[in-house]
Length: 189
Image (tube, rainbow, N blue to C red; front, side, top):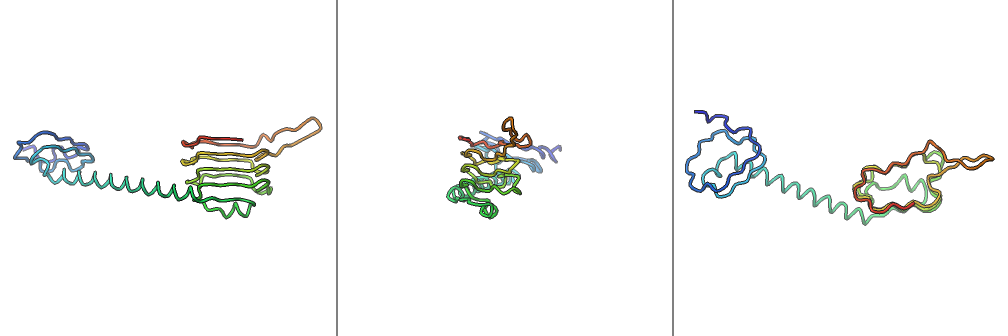
């Protein structure tokens, strides 16, 4: 009476210090359990739904730990890979899994190169750009780089000035975006 579907949709279960329990009649209880804490509960800990919940939670935790360890190894390996850029051709062939990018002086100044977007470089830890690079780039995007720690941009990079007889004026149509880089410690320009 009243046992069917009782406690069926419970997500979190904590059972503690019920050592004398010898009879349990919760037939369909705890079918949706996601989190289980069981300590000294006698027969109640033998319920199939709780056993499944405990195993499910343990499996999820093991998968989470394995994925975290895999990600840590990938980041360590990426940090060892370094790309040295001397031309647009080098830039176009760069491996997106590198940890360090170093761009030499006076590189990537071709007028068709308009956007500098590093969002695909998920393991990038360090970016160093020499002087007078990326002259025609209108947009610089350093967005969502979760491993990025250091950015150094040399003089007169991403800069094209228009001049007239009265002075030099910066191009107002240029944009620089730096966001969602939680590990960034150093920004030098």
